[in-house]
Each structure stands twice: as structure tokens, then as C-alpha cells.
Image (tube, rainbow, N blue to C red; front, side, top):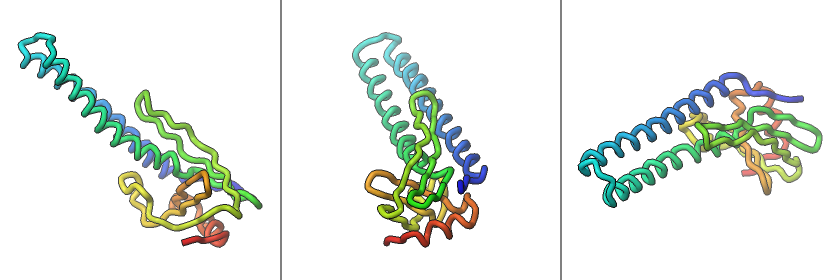
Length: 167
């Protein structure tokens, strides 16, 4: 039986993607305005100082953008949107994550063997995405997935926790 996430989580992720995309546009705008400002201050000449300042500004904006988006994307890409519990396996489909043009993480389908699976209840790892007190973290040697059971049917939490709980 497949358990699918409620539409509320999809709306939260969509709002987050829109916010991060607007942050990317803001970073590009800041770079362009900063470049124009430095160009005007440098008496409208393309010399070494202008290129150096522009390069430093571009690297700084890129660094800030990268570390603002990538951790959020990795966490969202590990968040379950569909859980299927079979006899030997738990199959989890995770959320895709796309921001602007260069960050595009496809949805993953993770297979967890029940006898190798570790299940724990933990706070959601990134409070800026979801401010949830508890989610179910599924891990094995290769994969990790977060199941925000608040956005699934109530029975899913009961089905997952008796399987095996490790602290």
C-alpha cells in the first residue's frame, strides 16, 4: 500500500523554491549593480582594479548563494513524498528539488531492506524548511530519508515505528 504525502508539503516546498529563486535573482542583481558602481568609481575604465573587484564580488555572491541553497536542496531531496511498505522492503520516493537553471535534483526512489534498516524519530534537520518537532529518519548503509509523518496519513507512523527502533 502506498502512502502519499498531503498537498500541504508540496506547497511548502514550492514556496521555498520560489524564495530561493528570488534570492538567486537578487544575488545576480546585486552583482550587476555592484559591477556598475565599481565601473563608475573607476572612471569608466576596464583596468586591473575593476576586474579584480568584480571577480572578488562575483566569488562572494556565488559563495553566499551556493551555501544558502545547496544544504536546503539536499535536505529536501531526502524528504519523502511517497512511502510504500512491502514484506521485505520499504520503498521511499523523495521530493525533487529545482532552483533556477543549475540546481536540479531529480526525485530518488530508495529501497530499504527491513532487516538492515534503522528507524529513529528526530527533529527535522533543517528548521528553515519545516519546523517539525519529529520526523522519522530511515537509514541504512547507503541511503537516508526523512518521513514527515505529520503530512501523511496517521497510520504510517504506526506502521513504521513497530518495525524496528534504534536509538
